[in-house]
Amino acid sequence: MKPIIYSELWVGVLLAFLATLFWRFLGLILAERISPDGHLMRWVNAVAYSMVAGVLMLILVNPTGILSNTSFSTRMLGLASGILAIYVTKNLLFSIIIGITVFAVLSTIWA
Amino acid sequence: MLNHKELKKNLNWVGVSDAINVPGFALFSTMVGFSTIAKEAGFDIWQVSATTLTVWGMPGQVAFAGLYASGASLIIIFLAVSLANMRMMLMVISGYNILGLHQHTLPLWKKICLMHIMAITSWAQIGRIKEKYPPSLLLSYYVGFSITIYLFGLSGTILGYFVDHFATTQVLRVITFMTPLYILLLVISSKDALNRLAVLLGGMIIPIIYPVFLDWSILIGGVAGGTLAFGFGVWRRI
Image 1: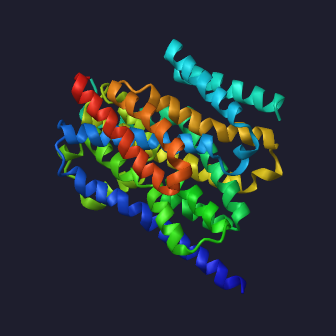
Image 2: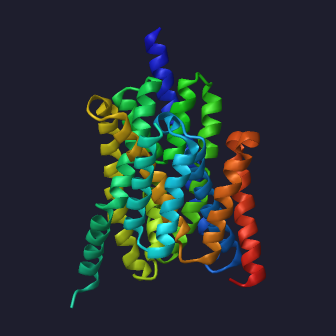
Image 3: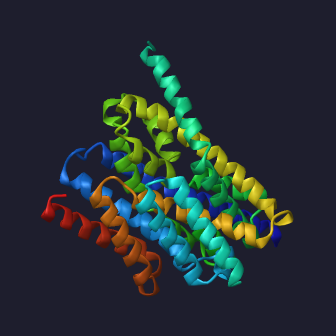
């Protein structure tokens, strides 16, 4: 029965593609109709930022795969130290290094 | 003095070189992470690569691989990927505006291609540097930047499929942690106070309501967080 499973996965790839393309295309159509400086655009922006932050926080709070073997506090302390660093230094690269270092050290110690 | 065409070409390369840095590495490692999950789920190398190239939105890709592994039906997979990648619509509206595509006379297929290569990274990047260049040059920057991280993403996908042969779990873990960290730091340091507030609210609301609303929490929490931030912004005139 291998070939059937194989082709079902390809149908899945096609569906995943269409599910994403649909939103991009709808965004394109709507973008031409929304005034760039209006309230609606500010709201869209705010919701976009809010969703992006939420999607990434979900990865850190409820991880699947390899991150799920680390503790919640390790991941949050890594993130918090990165946020603290970017507020103090305003330097993105430096703050990423701080966050990663804290995470790497804690996940090794508390493993 | 450079003419406009040369300037555009230059900006292409500025975009490329900005991408061959943290952004490229972040996309690379994100796709390494996706590829390891997809391999466990039973994808072959062609299927992981095709998913990265056609979907090009990590949360949707991870939802796809994770659900496929759990034996979910294709309808459920379609719905979950739709919900995970719905933010694309808002990113495209916002990105279209930042790039000033209203002012460009591009054929529709080119616009679709431009929006297809948009990732959270490239969207947040143009939001960050939009004051530096006029829209006509920003588009050149965006093209250079986005194609570069697209290639990094594809490389990460292919390498990620074989990475278990030569990297330790601890190294992989640190690499996987880098992407959410990087993008969260990028959006939390947005120059616009309203967007920073939206990041804070969405980042808290969505994980908190997740146990109740599951896949719908991105939509519900995202709209709630964004609307609260917007309302506060209008009220306090920020």
